[in-house]
Length: 525
Ligand SMILES: NC(=O)C1=CN([C@@H]2O[C@H](COP(=O)(O)OP(=O)(O)OC[C@H]3O[C@@H](n4cnc5c(N)ncnc54)[C@H](OP(=O)(O)O)[C@@H]3O)[C@@H](O)[C@H]2O)[C@@H](O)CC1
Ligand SMILES: [K+]
Image (spheres, rainbow, N blue to C red):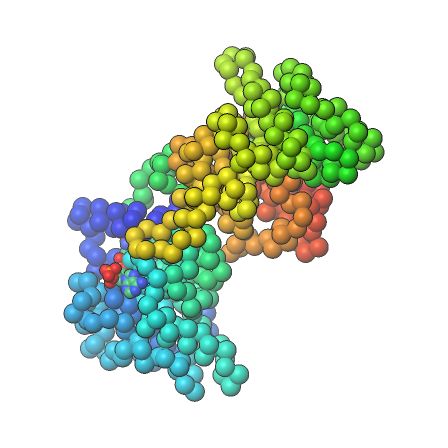
């Protein structure tokens, strides 16, 4: 998995590298500036053949320092470069000051405020946004926000000819690098060049919509501390995770048995889609458990999926005597009352084989609402549970965390969706998958990963009724295949987006499980 580094982690790595004597701050800044120039030339090779006009916007910290390096390197290529800066030069940190002074030998520095109203009728090919990077700790003041907003507006003026490209140094100014929260974002980038490792904020919340294309430039820092199982660590879910879905032979009983619990008459669609998802994911057997009145409806719709009557908690307990059932899915279309009744029996199911273990248990939709209403149920959650809340369900389960997520940042690291999910998993004592275009998965030990349907993996078609039910089924299927809960959640999230991308526009939830075979084939399985 790809590690993502918060601002504090980046500062720590930078400080350790400098303390070791392996590198100086000036070296790092020079490589950062060079990395930006290399990336923008790679993205826009047409610029290299002309004499582009460039405006470089520099802030009061080391992000601004990178900006002065970019300005110098572009001027050395013969480009027309103008620099606009925010803050007094004598307050710049030493390396940024050194690069500010080197730039002064090549050209002047105008106040950022001169850009209020944009660039007038002048043509500008490229704007380099080096106002704030990982040091942004609070919302922008209007004196910075206004020129950025004005450039944004100026870009859209009808009399303008040609596109003005925007490259952000490290992060678009106003984006919190840790959380992706908007602290005064006004200028969306076409290209963001970040250093050493990507940052969580580039994948969370507003990040993907404002970074444009994301390039990670190597600036010669050593690899970070060993990844995984570090409580503060955040990784990116990548293509390697789903290999756990592979089948290597054996018979159906070797691949697990999922029980999906369904609701009453006319409410079975969501559970049937979850069941279909679990079966396509590779569970050896899938059974749908519904109240007696809904048996005929479900029987008319199911073939490979088996059907059992589960009218009450006692019936569920009896059914769970079948030791081969090793994963359950509760929630889609279940009804809050039925979910509340069945949850204690589902949570009590234990298996005593070589060691005591609990069947995997996915709690979604109505099961989450029932859980939120009863703290006693929350106390029964175990480490093979996966909660899959969307924002509304998360708010019902953890209202204080959602409040913190929406609170106006007061400075310091901004509380992120990763922080919220990690804290939720710690409290729940199980894996939490907090859904969204930026899906965050965390376990009770503090491991955390992000799966963003963004950059080269956008999947806007997933915003369709029932997609979440299929995701719950995918997770249940992977749990039945004996994947650890966190792995099941990560792999399911990845495959879910892959199915949507593979199918494309026009996708409805029923298509997702049917697309899995194609996705598996594309993976070479
Ligand atoms: N780490 C690394 O390995 C490397 C880092 N590098 C580069 O350094 C960047 C980080 O530099 P940085 O720490 O100096 O932070 P940066 O973003 O320039 O801003 C800090 C300044 O902004 C100010 N300020 C903050 N919020 C504000 C607000 N709302 N409104 C107004 N002011 C505000 C803050 O003031 P203060 O909070 O102290 O009052 C301070 O003066 C990083 O993104 C990368 O580009 C590379 O050179 C290579 C290696
Ligand atoms: K920036």
